[in-house]
Each structure stands twice: as structure tokens, then as C-alpha cells.
Amino acid sequence: MAGRDEAGEDPSQDPGERGGGWRERLAAQACGQGRALRAWAVEHGPTGLFFWLLALAVGVAAGYAAIGFRLAIAAIQNAIYGADDHRLHSTLTGLDPLVIVATPVIGGLVVGVILHLFTADGRAGSVASVIEAAALKNGRLPMKTGLASAAASLVTLSTGGSTGREGPVVHLAATLSSWVSDRIGASPITARDLMGCAVAAAVSASFNAPIAGALFAMEVVLRHFALHAFAPIVIASIAGAVVSRVHLGDITEFDLPDHSLAFYQELPAFLILGLVCGLAAVAAMKAILVTEAWGDRFERWSRCPRWLRPGVAGLLLGLIALQFPHVIGVGYETTSRALTGDLGLHEAVIFALIKAAALAITLAGRMGGGVFSPSLMLGALTGLAFGYIAVGVFPSVSGSEILYALAGMGAVAASFLGAPLSTGLIIFELTGDWQTGVAVMASVSMATVVSARMVDKSFFLSLLESRNVHLAGGLESWLPGTIAVTHVMRLRGADDGAPDGMCWSLVEQGVTLAPTDTLEQALPQFERRGAGPFIPVVEQTPEGKPELLGAVFHLDALKAYNRALVEAHREEHS
Image: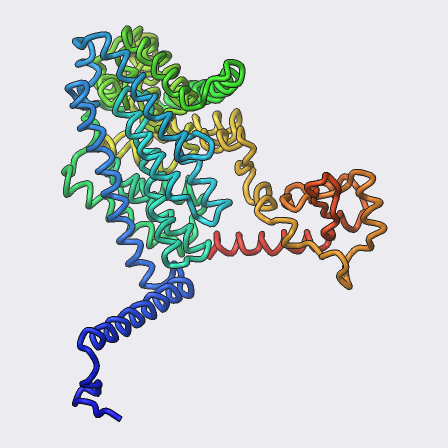
């Protein structure tokens, strides 16, 4: 047998083969370390140091995604219109009308093609999709849909869509966190917390608002304030803010002039403003949902291909922009003018109505984008109009119209998001004005109380409800929809299964479940049918004949539901 050298290797072996062996061993070692890392992530979850480091990395990545998205919009807008969103509306008045009309049409057609090719339903993902993924899909979003939605929203916002950039950024960040969760084999709890980290960083980077970013992730997306999620989400949110400040500077989005608040005399007026803003927000939200339903009916009636729908919406936006250029883009220039009192009462009212219509057209046309920035604009305009009236009627009591615009901005946005805490903080961090917090919170609290009674708590939950996804009622309402009947079904022929004869008798009465059903369909059937101990699960064969698979017993269904409730409450209160 051939001897070996001092390194323990066969000198007769080809050096390349020897190197290949080392490479294979190193690769195997790396794979083993990767498996160990994933196992560590799964075992320790959000309470481990590794997860905190991962939250930091995800926060940096989400921060760069938010900044990159923002800079890309500005670059394309400058290339097309010659100005970004902070000067866009005043620039449009000097452009060729053909450019104003044609740009959103072309953008809409591009968006339609992207969404038709790369999404299942032709819709761009939004914050509502992230909320649904956190609740019902174990904190996962598909990568292809996420990237396509980001691309579609980028085109929409760059070419005249009347929506906001924050929703797409939140969805993109959540998509990135889903990819990481898949790589490490994260449990549902870990994946949801990681999604919260990504969302917090995206919001923080978008608004330079680290406190509000962390609260937004927990209040809107995770919908709980569990202690185990708090530290990593805060770490990620700070990381997003640092990325923003490194590249954009430590600046606020809006600059406000000095103003004062006569607290005791004016507070009733801010409560009334909250009532008005809550009603205005409800009207805008319902207009969006109704317009989308009209769009669906028009698409079916006209047999219009779904990829053409955003182009039709773009045409309507372009025509509106000929007379009202402020509907183009996110709307920060008009919002800034409202917050500085650079608009009259008539302009504020008309601009608010036209912006609401443009927002509804954009979203109903499935062009992509979010609702937060438009809600800021609607709120600022509504508050400014209210302020003019309040100051005109009670000049000796009321203060600055600008302060009403600021409070209105927070009130409408909070109603849209269903998030009074994080929205109030976003307003403070956007403006750098912490002296008028009492006025803003008074309007925000009143607006959210009013709007929550008239819609399903927020625009996102109302949107999901319109798609038959029931999250507004809390755990008890949506948790049964996560448990498939096949997971609790006793198979046909099992020793403890249901007798075939009784099952077929129920089938003849129409009392059945399909294998694709969940406890959301099963539990109400037990209640309606009274004392029946089980319901057969039947699948239709290709020949159209029913095939009995087994039966779901009421006791098993209740046990599964109770276990899921206990686990969900353990996550929320851990």
C-alpha cells in the first residue's frame, strides 16, 4: 500500500484531487455550520442573541431598501418631469399637456404588464398583505410577488400615480424578512417578529422616525406589544433610522412656522376637528372600496384584460392633472403648502376632494402604492379648512390655522392606519414639533374612535374584509381559518372514526365539509346542526362522485381551536 506524507495525504494522489477533497470537506463543514445556525435560530427564536444580530442586519437591509426606493422615485420623476415630489406640482403647470396625460397612461400600462405576468391576482402587494401574512401565513410573503409589487409601485409613483411610497416599502421589507426566515427555517413566531423588525426599519428609514417605526410594526402589523418582540424591533428600527440619517441627513420631512396653542380654550375645537377628520377619513376609505368594486364590475362588463386596467386609471389621472396637477405623485409639496398656510379655504376644500378621488382611482385601477402619504395630505387640507372656519368664527379663542392642519394630518392618517399611537409619533417626528402634542393627540383619539365604528378598524383591515379575509374581529374571528379540517379529521375506517352509514346519511342531507375547508366553515355547522357529534369530509372525484375521506368530530375541532388560542395568547403575552 502506498505511503502517506507528513500531512497524512497520499503523495501518489493528483494534487487537484487532493484539493478537491479539501474543498469538499470545507463545503461539508460550512453546510454543517449552516444547519447548526438554522437550528440555533429555530431553538432560541427572538429571545436569543443571534436573533438580535439578525434583526440588526434585517434593519439595515430594510433601511437601504426604503432609501433606494425613495431615491429611485426621485430620479425617475426628475428624468420625466424635471422635478421630484417636493417641487413636482409647481413644475407641472409649465409642462406640455400631452406629457401630463401620456405619462401616467404609459406608466399604468407598464404596471399592468408587470402585475399580470408576476402576480396571481393582478394586484400590487400592500400593508394589508403584510398584515395578512403575519396573521395567517406564518410571517411569509412570496418573493416573486413582493419584487413585482415593488417594481409596479415604483413605476406608479414615478409616473403620476396618486398614492404613497411607504406602503410599498413596508411590503418590500416584509418580503426581504420572509426570504431570511425561509433561509434559517424560522418558526412562525420568529418569522413574524423578524417581519416586524423589517417593517419597523422601513418605516423608520422612510420618515426618519425610529420611535414611530417600532410602534407601527407592533401596533399595525403584529397587532400586539409582546415583550419578546420589543427589543429586536427597536434595534431594527434604530438601524433603519441610522441608514436614513447617514444618506439623507437628520432632517424632518416638513418645516413648520412658529405657532402657539391656547390649550384650555382650543381643546374643544381640536376634539371637533377629530370628529370631522374621522368622518372625512371614513368617506375617503369607503370611496376607495366602492370605486374598486365599480372597477371590478367594469372589467367584467367590458371584458377588459386585467393588464389594461391600470392604463385606464392612468388616463383618468392624467386628465384630472391637467386642471389639478397636485394629484400627481405622493403630494408632499401640497402637504407642505397646507402646513404653512399657503393655501386658501376654497383651495383646501377642492384639493382635498380631488385628491381623494385621485387616490380612489389609482388604487381601484390597481396601479400600486400606499395610502399613508395621501392620508397626510388629505388630513392637512381638511385641518387647514377647519382652521380657517374656526378662526373666522371664534377669532378671539382660536389660534393658528397651521396648528389645525397639523392636527388634521395626524387625525386622518391615524384613521386610515387604525394606529393612533404610532401615527401621532410619526407626525411629531415628521415635523419636529413636540410642543403641540396635546392638540394632535386630542384630534387623533377622537378621529380613530369615530372611524373605527364606521369601518373595520382601519383601511387595511377593511380592504382585507372586502376580500373575505376576516382579521378585524381579533384572534377569535380569524384563528379558525388557519386550521384545516384535514388536520383534525379522523380518517375513514379508523378505529375511532365515524361509521360509514351515518356519514353517508349526513352526506345525503347536505351536511359535509370539503378537504380544503377550515374550522371557520366547520364550527358554525356544528352550531347550526345542534347535537351532531361529527361532520363527514367529502371530496368530489373527477367523475363527479363523492368520496368519503373521514369525519371531523366537534370535540376534536374545539380542542384544536383551544390549542391554537392558547398558543396565540402565549405569543402575545410572552
